[in-house]
Image (cartoon, rainbow, N blue to C red; front, side):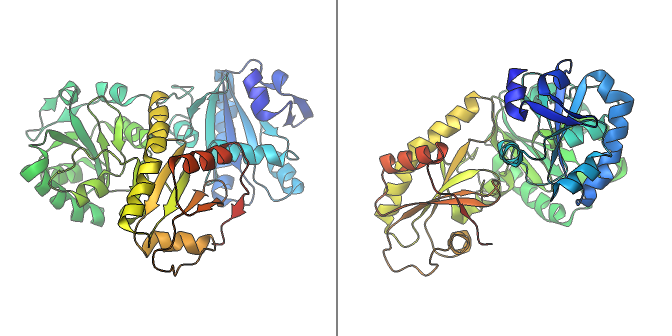
Length: 420
């Protein structure tokens, strides 16, 4: 309880006025932080449903909801909160609201983050969890692990006979989220099938098709074109669980799983497309990713970026080597905590144009660099409402990177705002 008080403050708002957080939450089994605002149309559509579910079933299950307002003024907050049967963070505590949004990487509303009684995260996708189970039969919606989901699922082979999920144990495999109605999927599937048959299967890779088709006939027709396994179309619940577990928001999506069940990459489509023969199979992400391969985690995490576009090859290599051990430490720390993504990621720009130029433009740096311009460090934290931090320019050593990251973590760097 003390952790929840520390997180939410000493007081919460109710329809009767302020109450102590300890009193308001003393008997609850889980707390849902509801990030919402009256001006947001999807919020106004979701709030009445959530209120009905809360009143009818969820409150009695032991769920309390705390509204975290993104309203533009206190009058709008009060009007909107008047429609809600739960608690709210004090509107006056704007700093705490910003801290919560940053802590849980809230990038859009409505968002529901569900915590246990000690303030630990159960799921950051509480909106989907509650919408799929409004009566709370699976309350408090602790996400199942991949192994738990597959244990309750049915896989099928080309003869449509069941295949035990244990056949994936000790293998690298990909979960291929796709559907016949999706044009990009229909373009990518034949390529993936060819790469699988000519190279990837021999490398030891298995693939499981996870269908977003609209009916079983479409699923069967589409699966007939594919040379791997599939999650049975009847396993709609497991399909949703897998999509939620890996944050799949669009298709085609290809998630690559390691032999121990951990995630190698959620961007397997890019990995296999750039290496269809599997020369670098199973495509473990490099600790320091190159911007030429795409934006990576830029939109989702704090990222240290070394801009080295016009530096010589030796200088670029030295910068990457300086960043690598620090990047590896953050990756190892995340894996030890059971998290897919590190708290801070690391990237490097080694050629002009593309994302590197865009970052320079957004941070007010010159896009036309003179030949052999010295490297420069920046730290992008786009989830924190478009924050960035300018680092040193010149020779970049491991010590310089460590100091830059430590100063960011300690709040010593000057926060700047992206220009657009």
